[in-house]
Length: 389
Ligand code: GAF
Image (cartoon, rainbow, N blue to C red; front, side, top):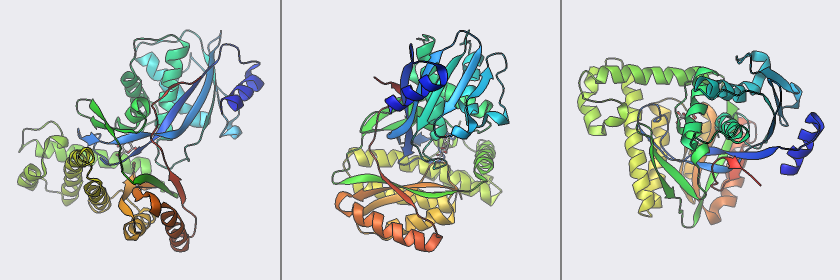
């Protein structure tokens, strides 16, 4: 891939002298969904697919972005003198937002840069192509401008800040954190209230992770995501009148059941119930994995899906079809929706010798029921973002 990026960079910007090349992964979350803005735990891992970027500083104040996946945008030109989200910039609002966020945090760039990217995270699949691009931009800026006092966690936080404030999605920290901090063959057990984290080796014995892309993305995704956040905020405010808590993640399921009567709206009861129970499931799932109890880990994944489907209501027909099919397929240890929801992907743990049948039988049934093909990826867990040789 590096060769293709170098070639394109030279074609667009003259030569490749003084360029640097970086990679930033996508992520899949194994369990702990919609808990990251509720002070709960998450358990994502970085993938080996992601976004590659090549960049070089310029002598003037122009910034040029080019995506080899989205040639139709051509070279997007922005300027350090006008860091504002513009519709015409399209995808380039993500890296530009990171430049803006660096400036907001006091890391002011004195000259612009040229940047070419190419990625292999399927678009709109819920595998964090935007976080991948944000963190990629963060590591590129640190590399090009010799910024040495920002840690990878700081870069993740800046990525989230740009997405919240420049691109209007009120996301939590999970995606940027996983992309920045990923570690080969490990998932990250992150407490989103303290940012304390621990790597946990994903030892699945004779099984592996299979992601299935439903290839649907329902258009309400951003607004519905922000609505769920608001419902959790409202539920927390009411629960605080009864319990001494800072976040929904502070409650056990028993404590929630004791206090839930203060929630007068049944919708808020369902949302808070998911946030509380999903956090507890995540803690239990990591303990099960550490104890080599993959069967329990899979059961908790299945429970997670039911809760996201019925209480949090972020699944959709196509995803439920994929999960139902997976649950009925021999050799499947657990299966659930992954990511923000309303389409995107499922994540399943499948026994190695059942993977071929999983792909062929679910592939055929999904096509028959939904009318289009699903895509299957048997994935490996990779490293977080950084410069590549
Ligand atoms: C999206 C968000 F970006 C994450 O912060 C997280 O909330 C996730 O949805 C749901 O768990 O990916």
